[in-house]
Length: 92
Image (cartoon, rainbow, N blue to C red; front, side):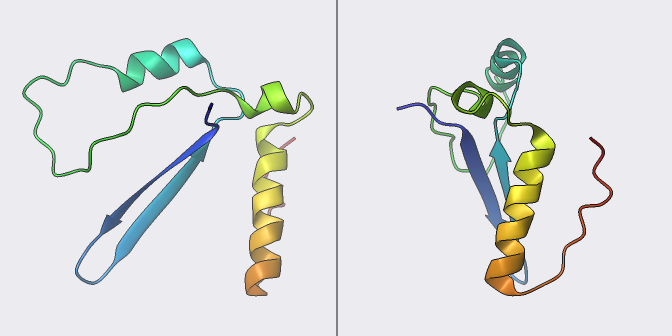
């Protein structure tokens, strides 16, 4: 199984943070270099990451780009939560 996205979250006493990444057209060599750095001596309270094989969404859908992904996620969120989100700031 190959993954095209990942998530992370932090739960605080009075707040919560969550983020999601989607690999649209990333340089996988640079991605691996940044993820597999030597962190010897670094301490963290974070949950350990699960290592997995990844691929770019562009390999499955060659005409996709980052703006199309943002617009699709925004439109889905707008419909689901009946809110207004403006994506006019996105540049093509």
